[in-house]
Image (cartoon, rainbow, N blue to C red; front, top):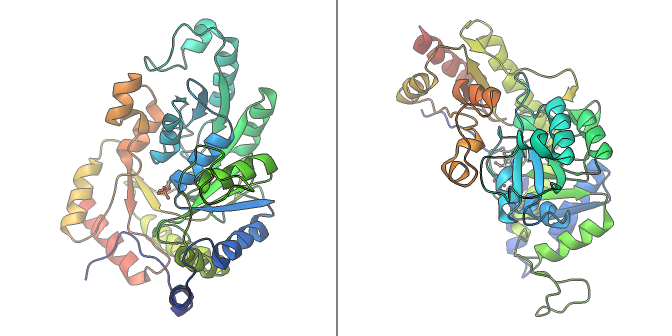
Amino acid sequence: MKIPMSSPDLTAAEREAVAAVLRTPNLSMGAEIQAFEESFRQFTGSRHAIGVSSGTAGLHLCVRAAGIADGDLVITTPFSFVASANVLLFERAVPIFVDVDPDSGNIDPALVRQAAQDLLSGGTAARRWMPRSGYNPKLEALPLKALLPVDVFGQPADLDPLLDTAREFSLSVIEDSCEALGAEYKGRKAGTLGDCGVYAFYPNKQITTGEGAMIVTNDDRAAAMMRALRNQGRAPGDTWLQHTHLGYNYRLDEMSAALGRVQMARLDELIERRMQVAGWYAERLAELPEVEMPRLAPYTSRVSWFVYVVRFQPGLDRDAIARRLERAGIPARPYFLPIHLQPYMVERFGFRPGDFPVTEDLGLRSLALPFSGVMPESQVDIVCQTLSKVLQ
Ligand SMILES: Cc1ncc(COP(=O)(O)O)c(C=O)c1O
């Protein structure tokens, strides 16, 4: 028996909802996307919810709607899935990486404040935060536009101090909650804390639509722009072949939306099941002194487990452990490889090992174990027993 890295949690209700769409002629832009969006307005209390084809697409629309363009700077984290930084590069903006908190893996708000202050004051203080290449070094006033924090592994970033910094320096906040649907920060829902937030629905996420995502915002102007850009730049009043803006096809089809609507109705149950599996892991891994378990910050009033990522004590060879687990039939993945050390980032911005030491340390020591809400306790047992043997 092979233990999967992750599995969606689907029932007959999801299958029937998708099949029902296939019995109609409306496979795109119909009642299902409207119902799915409405479920997010209800859940988040946000004025607008916009279904899109992926988390990457959703974040890209947030970047476009915030007016972030060529040469603009955005402070973000190097400890994330690459898409959170790539969406800046799509618009030729410059990601200003700052390091993360070693416990949560989320962006360090004190560093963010310092970076914002230094960048806006210019001169040598600003240079400390800029990449070695990939921007115009002659710029006097640095065009810092936004913060893009990521809620890593289902735990919200420390948003209150980030929002203070954003207010102080008039910056937009785009919250990448692609991994954190259902998580709460001091009782407030992750994804709703900034100007706009994005949840993603790849099959390993809390809910899935196959591919897909949802943007939420209270900003009427941004929402109208994102709706237009999602749909090939058609503004209200445009016909099918009129395009007011340069847009994209970032629509979510009706089959995916139907699947998402049913999953969303089960969200609490899905999160609870993931919590239970994380609890089984925590009980067993407590007996392995070489393994550090995921740490929850005091501000996390509800975690919404996305992946279960452990860290090995310094000095242990994470990759060798992963290889031995694989050989024993247990998949495991390093999570994350730091964004600033991806080859195209190094080439463009001149990043080097050592630039973001906390991120790099986490990147070297972290391993995601098999995890999903449908994982039986017996499989958690097998993973932990095998890990224990490998460590011995
Ligand atoms: C933090 C983060 N941001 C963005 C994305 C992009 O989402 P998608 O894969 O749906 O494009 C993901 C998805 O894995 C993610 O984990």
